[in-house]
Amino acid sequence: MRAQNGDQSFVHRCRVYYEDTDAGGIVYYVNYLKFMERARTERLRELGFAQSQLAGEDLLFVVHSSEARYHSPARLDDELLVSAQVIELNRASLRFKQQVRRATDATLLCEGQFLVACVRTNSLKPRAIPETLRAAFAAVSGAGKQSEQEI
Image (cartoon, rainbow, N blue to C red; front, side, top):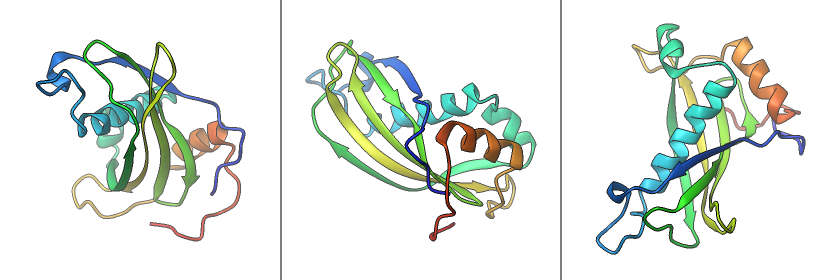
């Protein structure tokens, strides 16, 4: 399902710590991926689904593919706003659009898209997203038509 414009925004706040930066005090590029991963996890939690609970139900979400574009650096002690918007909901996958912005001035620092596959815990084989989880994502994303490309 492709999401419509009615997406309810989700933003996760986090702070840049010393461990996130290089010697110049600038966030090391790969750490933006960590910030976005945390935002997706918190999005699930906000919908009432903890990753630990899902693992007990033979369900894991794994990143199938990612794309990131860097615009401006974050620095030590910056507060960041990290969005996690579902833009595509398929039988066994979700596509997230994400942005990292500086909280003080809303400057776009990094943006990306992530295809996240739903798999079985032990075999790592694709499995359908449970209906309760699909319904929760559909409700906040205003999901519409079925996508042509499905994992």
